[in-house]
Image (cartoon, rainbow, N blue to C red; front, side, top):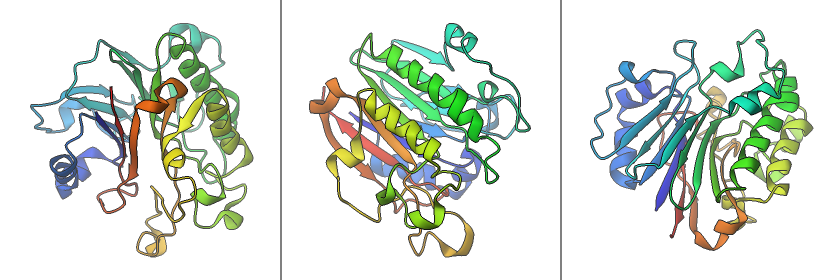
Length: 266
């Protein structure tokens, strides 16, 4: 089973460029998880007869949003966090809105695993959402996936808007305490790994450098490979022996992120 993940930074724009169609034709994933769709289903003309479409769009038009396109019909689908979990945290609107209304999580249940697709809130340049990450989102998301793995193994993928270690960005010294590389955001990824999840790319490519999933549009960063690895596949440890491959597909343009994938054997 091949599962892909891609922050498309606007699915409509990606479709107009033809990049998304090219990617699907060449990679032929069983499941693809999308982040930052920036659209509702009726706003996008997607002709994918082989895939069932699952959408979690933001309340705010043209913003955020996630989707899963799957050839394998899930046993169940869940959007966002559970009511009990939401009630445990003091969610509130900030200047950007409410993270619980932004279509940031879809969970699909399959016979052998749960698949969680997430678009983690960006801490923003002035770190105006860092407190949201540290105090609300990261703890809630961690609890959510830990609760799921009590029932069956879990695959988590998406844009986590954080580079984990120095090897995961081109200029770590220049970015210490900048959004995406603060101690708090890196700790959030530490907490996922400490909870029994495996960073699939690092597990199979522990020392590989220069492998990134996001590049700013400014200053020719992508051409010079001045990038960050902020998109991940995590799997719970019982799935370790099922993991056969984990890749970053840097050659696909169409977004400021590139697709990533894993191959699992069940």
